[in-house]
Length: 116
Image 1 (cartoon, rainbow, N blue to C red):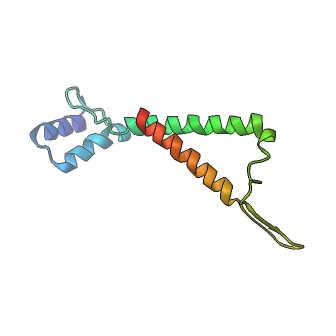
Image 2 (cartoon, rainbow, N blue to C red; image 1 turned 120 degrees about the vertical axis):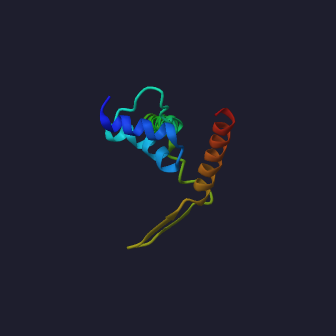
């Protein structure tokens, strides 16, 4: 065990100061090997799981648009979507489509929170 690891270990065993907790969290990131007996906090583990789940959801949505994109032509042309086209001007505001997406995302997040 090197000298820095011994100093960190000795200080951590004697006090539970806030600075020491930060050292515990940063030690693996800067390459300091902590001796056995000092727990490494696993606060980032749930965040990693959520990032992977969000990535999988984005991939699934991308595959749906890629494979069924030609069948989704109605989306964006619903009643209530505002479209103004003039000679040198175009304005498009898909209000109904945004409401539909909002409802679907709300339902998905509600189901996600119930399961996890």
